[in-house]
Image 1 (cartoon, rainbow, N blue to C red):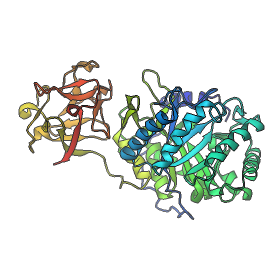
Image 2: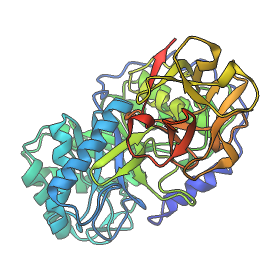
Image 3: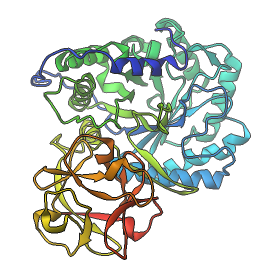
Image 4: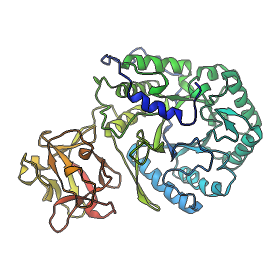
Length: 480
């Protein structure tokens, strides 16, 4: 499929307008044949630059700065990986490279992101992205630049068993046979690299992996598959299952899906098995197939990616970045999306993610409370912790905090985005001022403003305030 560097994201936008087909999911994969092996050791996300990695310049990942030293990159990356590990259960990160990055002054710093990952025990997949120099239009056009880049990378990381190499992301300008020849030449030029540390992209947009599996010259390698709604249009759940199983074919035992994703900041409930939403059907089917066939996966994007109009990152992003300098934290915008990803990874049973908790403020030791347990709209407070309905909060799959048996939602009043915005209860309406992200650092952030749920320690009333990491902005969930 021919495409410009940005058209794959235009198709994401167009996909939102597609009409979903009408059918309710049926039982999944009852007749699935077992894979000969499994790749479930890969539980990962892509860390990308803002604006995507198809870029004619150095690849500066979201949260990094081109002026950062090696030590600063390493410190920032360590904070990011801690968040990915704590929030998601991830153990793998896929990082982009190009000729503007490798072997340059930025490479001296960028390697801090690779080294921080391996120091934490993460697997790292290094993938070359079309930069207009070594490749253009999805096709290798300068073999010398391509090999020089990869020789530099392999010289540094060839002996590190945690680092994997993907010669090229989405080689769409090559035929399957032509692309296989490129990979064979790459392997032959680097015989010391074990084949099970090489990711062979499917031909086209990483979509045709069966051709790669069938080529005996590539035996022993991992094949990487990309899978998005906009590649093939809307389907019902069963059709998505069939489509993906056909794309995988006999290759399940050596496949890692190193790109797939869906919107995570629109309040979609991925736990809704009866949903007619195409994204829900796609994501549920995908995670079911990955789990059943024991296929590892690397979500796009975990962090960074295309900047969606009106916000600071990709609307598919599984994590949101907060903080400054090296004091970085991550939060999860969609609990149901995370639950489905963890289900694909075999870390959860796939149950609905709604859970009832008491929310204790670290600074005061008191709990988030509706004064008098009233169903009237009222500013919330912190109060001595108890087991009353006034302190029973349900964290829903869609990111809401509901109370009083779902009669009221926690709401940033008047859609406020300034310090001091009153936070209280209001009838649930699905607005983004009623959605919250609970971070691994204990923060609870408004999905609308990014401000933190904050206790005024004088009045004990709850408000929004710029996040600064104080204990009055940290919350602990307690089962009741």
